[in-house]
Length: 132
Image 1 (tube, rainbow, N blue to C red):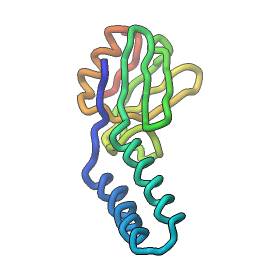
Image 2: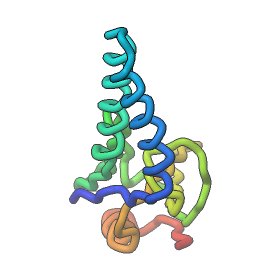
Image 3: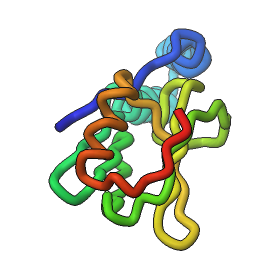
């Protein structure tokens, strides 16, 4: 099942205003290199903004963030808790959940529907410590 990332409006502004402004300024410049670099930056940011989601299969949690992906075995998940940790992660909102897995693995994500997400994970592994 696929879960989209929750997106904070302020975070969108923080990302898109500088990129949009830089892209507009680059269009007024005479050099092609800056135009190509700003276009590539905008495409990359768009890929992350529109391509961040989380998939739960029978045994695997797949986290996609633009060109980046991470696979976590659901049976290895130890705990899930609410957090507002601002570390860089595959989350487009500050309202996140922290997933601890394996010996020392940790990831931060921000599914739109946290309750449904956590419920589905628990159906597949009910030994997870939940603090939501």
